[in-house]
Structure formats: structure tokens, C-alpha cells
Image 1 (cartoon, helix red, strand yellow):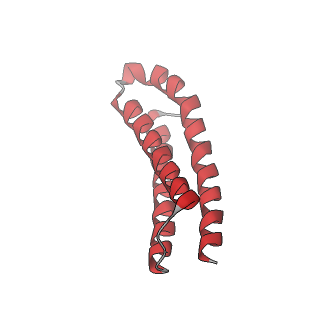
Image 2 (cartoon, rainbow, N blue to C red; image 1 turned 45 degrees about the horizontal axis):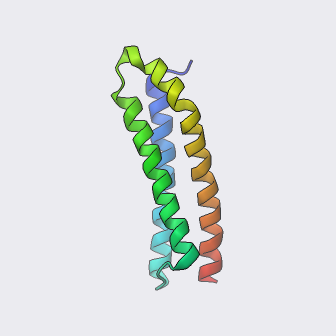
Length: 103
């Protein structure tokens, strides 16, 4: 079993990576003078919600006592992998939409 510190660091890194990528796309759009509309606006909002879900899972895990951590991680693991997958999916989809939007 991976230790608590490593698990939390990996989750934090994944969330930070997602946040940075989303912020870069939003900055790129702003730099080009574009505001998100329609499907693109929805995709950005969905990416934001996915990041928030991940942050909530991380907070729940971090708040668990050492005695509760293993159970909390078991309960969180499947959900976290789902959030991680959602982040990757939304990032890929959003990146393609932004490329099309800015083209």
C-alpha cells in the first residue's frame, strides 16, 4: 500500500496539473480576445466542476485520522480514479474545442 503522504502528493499534483492546464487555456483564449460561448463555455464549466470534485475528495482524505485513512482511501480510491479519468477526458476535449475555437 502506498503511504498517505505519497497518495496525497499524487492527488495534489494531478489537481494542480489540471488547474494549470485549464488556466493556460483560459488565458490563451483571453489573449486572443475570445470569450467562451456555447459548448466551449459548457466544457470549461465541466472541467471546473471536475476539479472541484477532486479537491473535495482530497480534502476528505486529508481530514481523515491516521486510523481512518486506510478506509477513507479505499472509499476514495475508485472515486478518485473516476475524477482523474474525468480530468483527462475533459482536458482533451476542451483542448480540442479551444483549438477549433481559436482557429
